[in-house]
Length: 491
Image 1 (cartoon, rainbow, N blue to C red):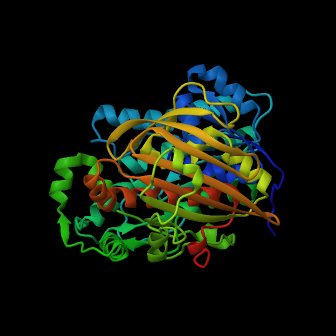
Image 2 (cartoon, helix red, strand yellow):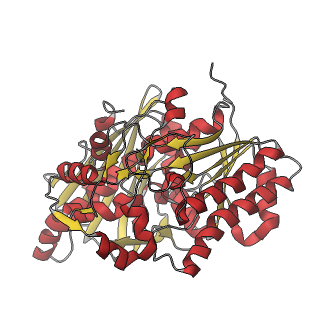
């Protein structure tokens, strides 16, 4: 029988602004939990996480960490340096150990020093624990490996497990390759594959244990509330694949050839010892998740990759045939973007969320580096001006938004007063449908640069807007429940 902690909790999170953390935060907020997040840059974190989570600055040091932990019912520890940000030099290895083992030790020390301790610690781990094991099927009882990464993960887990002696339930999700559009391995791979530059790595026979981001988030959410989750748990989908199979399926999904090959010697010359983690692999099986009845939304690789590359079919971009009279004062738009989203939450809650300027960053892809400049408005209303910085592709730029129309609980319009478009006029409207809300977006816009703008619209702007608004639909689904409509059958 399942044993759940159903009540809302106070949850302390490290690594909240990372790839997994950005998806986990809205999912936990949906369940009514109160979140505090350990962050290095509060302004950037607020832009990334939105208005609802409390931020605890790492500049406060050990004392701030103890206070944050003491007020928490649960801790989720996701922080750690990117393993593949550079060659594994001696200095880089020390940094990796410090960011994983060292920070985990600091976290457990803060818990030990607290009078009121959390009940559970969920500390991310990795399938790298097992080392390179060829085709051997690995469950949670399998022996560890003996390379650098395996040793790092063992020390990392050992540091977290010390919290058991303090009375905490400790869960160690051993994470495989996480598949999502806004980060992780696919953030680098997808652009290459879409250009027809996909390549298998080395022999291609090495096993890849993977998991879709939405399933990864649900593993963490379940581990927090289900007391049967304890110790190491392989956080991977049921069917590991070879690197060659991953390459072939991803190429098929993006409808491009993948005929290239990255030789092992070239990878080792480029990455040094870090290449071993790409050229080796683990065929991990989620034995405990299966025994505990965990439901995978995306158990098969092709379905998972299609969900990652999903574009909302409710999103339409076409020429303007008729524009609202309100637009006549600001210009004549050339193009119209339309999207309808069914949000499974009451209108008052949905409108309140979109009324807070700080939440804009939480539904914007991370690589756009959205950040409000100056103090954000406490409450938007007609005439409110918001200045912010974004990146479009590699280009940083400033954008000024003016709220032209504000109809509380029903509709508002933001207009670009300064930014990359010749004209941008975005109408948000909200209609109650019982306990759900139908949200309609209409964006009237014109590309800059005259005839060159039409070329840019075809080559770049249309695809960028589809990616932004599809990501927005995904994050809305995480925050309020359900799934984007085209994914509901898969889920």
